Length: 448
Ligand code: AMP
Ligand code: ZN
Image (cartoon, rainbow, N blue to C red):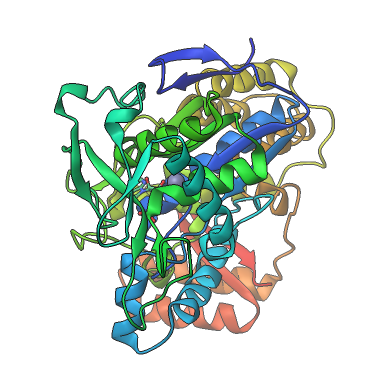
């Protein structure tokens, strides 16, 4: 079976056939770097990474571009509050973002272009839209896209075109989910506000234009895949289509991929609702960021996932059990073809990660020689990205005195003497080992 993926444009699962298998072009909408990203954003970034890995597993070569929004209303407001420049703020949080994604084993994109570094191309792009009569300038100098002039407006989101309020405009970067309105391509700024010179005076780009321009610049007029969270489908992606197809006259994206949200108590995790956690919160609770990746993989990307600390702890336990089991395995050799086959089929079936994980566990529990299981597991982990190579066949020699302290600690725990058990944990740590409490009892790791 070949790779099949749900295309939000056609609303069907389609076989993935790139324009050029040796250069699959893939663009993902990246973060606005004004603060730590939350773990909802990270769910979308793990989806991009998963899709890229699955494509590579299918022997495609992928060129993946993810933008950094380093100028918008939020960045300007936050940097003013902090008394620093927008670029200082975005530099700081770009670093935090790169740190976060590397902790989640997200492979680096080919490029992370920044909006502020492509303003002159955006100006040229807007000039073309004006020249084609698809955009107009307002009295205050700002330039807007005229949605009524783009015949295919609504083809992705299915918005009712009769609702189009041409001539009613949206200037803010915070967009209404209901109204179909002309949107800002170029926003005039006054006085000392951040801005660039343009044929229309000093201003800055609207949010949507950066993705159209950077996608075209790095990947060409027509790209294979464009991904984002479902909240971006309308108006962001609809507007990107209008801008890009308006300029090139060609189809912009062949496969649109949208990931569902991470929820908290049934509501979308978001900065504006204040119901969000960051990777710092996860690490402060002693949880490995890769347990979060594991948790994301337990759900299908098109299903909502409700975040709870219980489910994250369960994911951590599952990962701990997996790591401890595979430590005792023999060195990897050629694996179990049958499990590998079913695993690949699950992922090729619109990225069914939950099923892929179930097949991995079936393999782990099977009677195959551990060396063959290790071979298959490492292949599977090329796609899952759980960092298992570090643990396979890495049996630890635990000295007798440490083992003795571990059994004393188990005894103390049985007697609910948590004070003593904590003391013993500390003694064990001082000897260079850590104890993990798993469902199968205490496990010992060497501290690196
Ligand atoms: P933003 O920085 O808000 O533009 O978001 C960056 C990415 O995270 C986009 O692809 C959003 O669709 C996605 N995103 C935002 N909130 C969530 C959420 N709660 N769950 C999953 N993805 C999200
Ligand atoms: Zn975008």
